[in-house]
Figure 1 (spheres, rainbow, N blue to C red):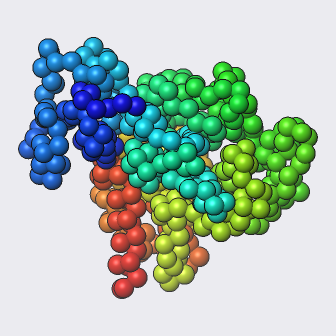
Figure 2: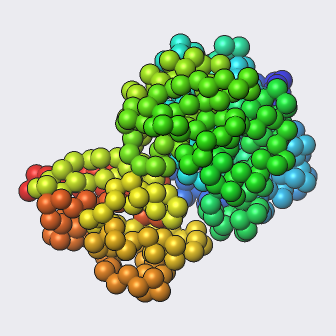
Length: 454
């Protein structure tokens, strides 16, 4: 991609926008930046770097009507319904995201992983397996460094394990992974996409440029996600925790096996080799094994990666045990399906901390799963009244309200008994109280450490 002297507008000065700005400048482009925030609300550090890097900065105002740009790189955090996106469509030759920019600048091969839940765990596992196979690997996207930084360091032998969200996939044009995956599809981000169907269409962009030489790994057990395979141009490879498949990756006699196109069964490892808890993580491991196998990784390297993988931060992460009570950080449980999976994995005697930013989800199925598992539910954040209403409908009455996470932790500490589990799994995004689920999870761990010193 030739960028020298191209006029490029970067919209959004978050993590990906800053990365795009820096790389574009380095590649010789004439960079301009936009952010909807008033300059007084932008940190001095970001404002200073943007002013020193870009030829023009637009803080809280659109660029001039007469301006034209070769293309715009828009942050995944900016809905395509916002005014700046409309400006991009009418004043820029093309509107793309940082993922698309990175793809055009990179060399090597992409494994792209999307789905509602499990992306971070599965992407991390894929990255570890690729590294154990001796491949030059970057773990990028919604985790790790921005894709565009890794693109600058890539060569023909590079492999990218990329976690890609529906927000990123909305703006892909040429992005072409050799292996893509849909882990599952359940309602999420409806405040952004409007409908479940639109959310699914955005996710399906992960395979839109693939060919019959490529592979699409999809969850046989999740009918909503599997239905999207109908429009896929790549070779569809299912995985299943529940059924033995004619072709694909599945569980047989307590072992993970892959039945390939030649009707040959390849043994990978036993279920006892999986270090991360929960049936949902068996699905994540099946998906990762299939992706790596069809990317040409040897079965023994896949098995070694699975055996040595201990999970990721903020996803059913064991933090500590205090007085016989175990504390788990599942701050990455940012939707109801993710939190329901955490409850299934930890089983019972749970004091659950939940609530946060409203993504317009139906809370009733989540509330129905509390019975028999959760001893008490501590509610915080914007969605606390909605979750309580769903609990009332479900006949679950063991809940109470707290102002914030600190008050929730105090209450949990007081009511917990030996053998109990205190679980932070909010079933909601963090944005009403924290800038990210990572910050929320780190705060939880800090509070556990404080309790330990009492």
